[in-house]
Image 1: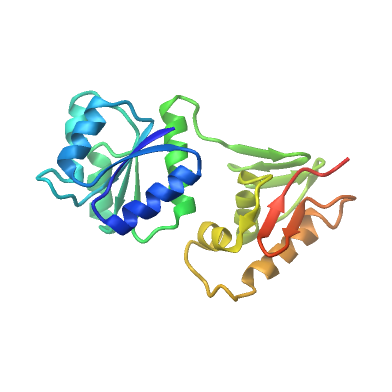
Image 2: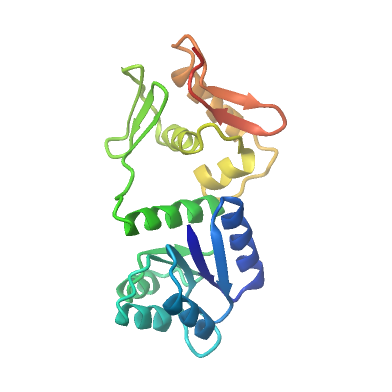
Length: 227
């Protein structure tokens, strides 16, 4: 995807740009509202990550209102330290498609941007995940393996969902802490090990082959059962 990031904070911009590029996306950057508006109006992007407070005489709200007035319907994710309900409502009423407050977990930002881009292409939201014989319904919150129902606690469900969305990839502890728990824990905490152990008891133990694997000195990986 081609993504435009309009963010004046160098640290935040660098963090977001690096992460999006590592995820395989082509990313352009503007550090003020005037340049951001010019780029958004003159080029084609699949999604825009837009800060609320911007220098250059044009803030995020005005930038987006101008774009929508030009019938530019590129999906926009607001990224802002302005976290009050009224702030979020103003952003959405201005034409924003989603609103993420700072500080944030990159895994969540990536998931939201990719979801907006899919929606913009008319693909609609994903409601079901499947890895091999493991199935997850995101609407009913149901999980089955080989047709057998698996009852999970809310945190176990989120952990398994994260692993399924990254099936075949090594998922690090940092990714899990940010993506499943939404904030940073002490890296030495054993909370991940405890929850992964509980999840294995339900997803792997009753079946012949495991799907959740430990990758030594790296993290975990969910992959289809081997024949």
